[in-house]
Image 1 (tube, helix red, strand yellow):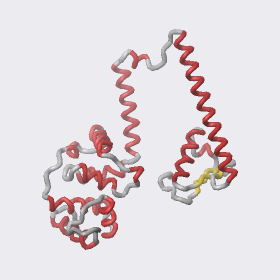
Image 2 (image 1 turned 30 degrees about the vertical axis):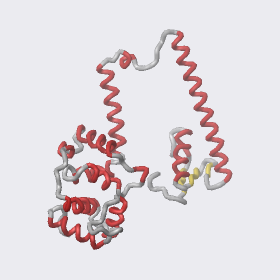
Image 3 (image 1 turned 135 degrees about the horizontal axis):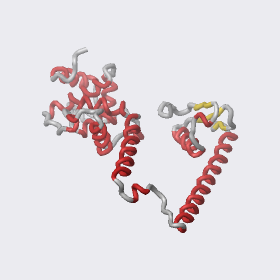
Image 4 (image 1 turned 45 degrees about the vertical axis):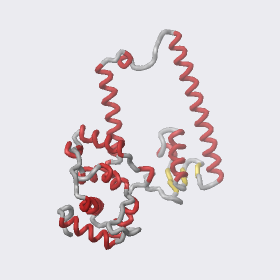
Length: 248
């Protein structure tokens, strides 16, 4: 829902406990909304960031949250110091002793959490990786993945490779996607890229593909300064002849 919020929108909830797990989480969500130029309003709480009174209430909540965090830090420090004077050391005893079972449990928990986070973005990259690898180099796959994404959601190559390796390890992707990319003729590279963009969205227009190639900073095949629909159409026809696309 937060990804769909646009500038000028107002997110409305019945109560703030329907949106956030804690006061600090609420402030984090509101900060994300403000960064997008959107507003927040709670029906049963005096919070409406579109009004001066609501902004004041939010500032008071922010100060209270910071005070709460400071108290928690102080209590934690005092508790740890008291425990040390009594000879007790915090943490997991199994981890301190490097017990294999405890280490494995923590490792699996971290892997599960990582996979859950990847699942939230799988629609952005899994279809492209499944369709393009290993026929296309990772650099080109990365640019195709990032083409339609906003800057804050774009991938780095190392992060994408880590995600792919995790999905291969858990059986969500075939091992073949990690094979070394085969060498392609230079003339075939652009048809492959255009076919990948078209394959991800069969209804995409020629002009939209032009815009996507511009965002990827792909050079035009005829030395022009900008991509033209006629050039994209030519590449799509070549991709069809190469068997990269089926005729509609």
